[in-house]
Image (tube, rainbow, N blue to C red; front, side, top):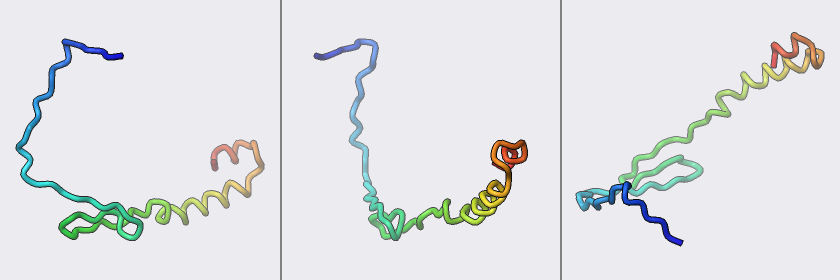
Length: 73
């Protein structure tokens, strides 16, 4: 089955691309480009881990279902 819509403009290919960039995604380095530039791994979980542990300890001390438990969650 094929569907053609005349209201959609056709795309004109552009051949003006002069450079291309190769990107390698890895585990030790998050990104490595073909020029050797590296981007380190964003450690969002590692940075938030101590804060998360502290908040979980606070919640664990509350009686389940209480207003203070709901506030701590």
